[in-house]
Length: 216
Image (cartoon, rainbow, N blue to C red; front, side, top):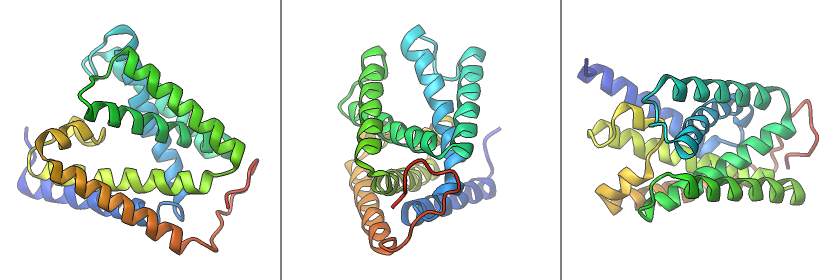
């Protein structure tokens, strides 16, 4: 049953509010966002991995859902309890998602090659973040990108461009295929979010209990 106008309005408003908070306050609320991000990213990664390696259609089979759910749950738990793993998972998620999004904008569908490139880039970003202690800026960039994508996806969902299963995946390919205006809006929002977060968190340090590295 399709959502009513009221349900559509409520879901879009909630998604947009979350998107605004993540875009402009993502670093400050990062410890709250972490397990949520871990689950969502892990869920998508599990399903995409099954698709890339074994050809399972995304969310078209029970196996895809089960693997996605288990991966998401594991990522969420690890992100909540272990800071160093949380930083690694988030950094990998930023590198992986950005690579998949960029390659999809070039017209490449998710397959083994795209999946492999994204995994390599994600792994390289994890190494760089931990090696050079730049997690604060990766968190700011990652949350700004994710929040901006959610805001744009909410608009697209409201206008019927994105369907419900695509909303949480924040399909950049769908946005670009319909209008470069959405891509430009996404880049402007993300850029403004990055600038705002950097300016407003110059003297702010995350209060992490189990710290292997310092978030500063």
